[in-house]
Every structure is written in structure tokens, then in C-alpha cells.
Image (tube, rainbow, N blue to C red):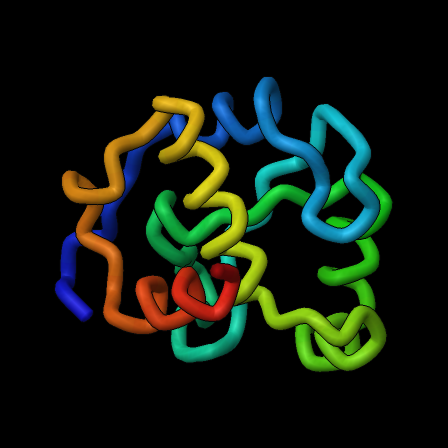
Length: 114
């Protein structure tokens, strides 16, 4: 990973206003930054393109119980939910995937969605 982390506040706003929760399908979700999988540590946050749409309650649950327990409970990886959120925002014209510095795993997860 590069030392400069990609930041774009418009992505979080687009998630809140235009996406639905990746698990429940409810509108107006919280944007959640990917944790674990090599993207988090004390005082760090994953890039802004690595966000997913979760209800506030699910977002809180993930942080309170840990990402591994959350992924096991819902049988979804955060990476798959990041890919789902990015596809939705790209298809709706809020982001251009070709302009984001995403990592190879994102494309792999998107291919699984098809």
C-alpha cells in the first residue's frame, strides 16, 4: 500500500444518500470503512473507496463484536460489501471506478457479484 491514503468525503455522502445497507436493504446507511484484512491499525483508517453501506445498528455491531465475528454471523465479507457498494455507486454515476486507486481484490470481488 502507498503511504498516502486516498480520501474523498463525497463517497461517504453518496453512500448515505443513495445506497442501501448491504445486509438489510434499508436506505440511508452509515458508511463503514473496511477494517481488518490489512487495512486497519491503531490510529489508521482504510482508504475512502473502501467503504460499505451498513445500517447504524449493524455498523455499531461490527465495531462492538469485531469484524471476524460479524463476517461469520452474516456470511458476508467486508470486501464483498465494499465491492457491492462501489458497483452501485459506479452504475449510478456517483463515482468512476477507473479513477479510483482500488486494489486488485476489489475487481476480483466485483467479478464474484456478476
